[in-house]
Amino acid sequence: MGGTLDGRRALVTGGASGIGAACVRALAAAGATVTVADVDGKGAERIAAEVGGTGWQVDLADVEALGELTLDTDILVNNAGIQTVRPIEEFDPARWRFMLDLMLVAPFLLVRAALPGMYDRGFGRIVNVSSVHGLRASPYKSAYVAAKHGLEGLSKTTALEGGPHGVTSNCVNPSYVRTPLVEKQIADQARAHGIAEDEVVEKIMLTESAIKRLVEPEEVADLVLWLVGDTAGMVTGASYTMDGGWSAR
Image 1 (tube, helix red, strand yellow):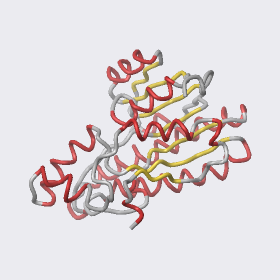
Image 2: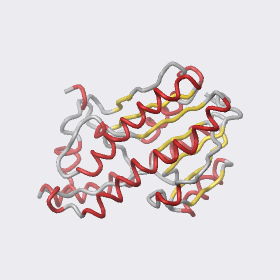
Image 3: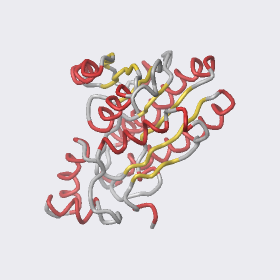
């Protein structure tokens, strides 16, 4: 795929680790110049240096600071996210709002900042890293599920508005991916469900999946790479599941 994104500029949020870092590497390998945005500034600089890109330390949960932002990029990958596993009646309201700011309000503000330049150039690719939880719910994840369901709606609306201007917008919807976020969840899920950690992957994470393994970050990045390329110009307003069959039920 090398060279297919020559001359394109890309921005990946949460780009210092996990799915984001895999996307940064895939886009750069295809020729894009990538800005790595992450609250972990050192991590962002490290990944950026690896691919000849630029690091951007930014707290995307500080949504007030994003209101006047202008982004000059051809490709936007909204990936940054966090998880909290709590029953609704025990869920801290401030934490709930924080998660919605990070995973729904911030993507809206970044799309808002990027669209004028994309419209001017007649080209844009927006990929929102959603989740199978953008299409299905699970207990104890009210903030995450609500944010991802909202992201699905934002992505589709962006697709409808952007279509006449050469801008596509899509979601990718993986199930559990082998990332630091998921590894941390294993302990949280064990506590919430009252089972041993070694039972969480099999009994909780993979119970709905026909394929009994975690998704690899590079697999998600490969799908993102296709969606931002020229051959996906008619793919917009879609949600691409990579969930081992979970949402087929």
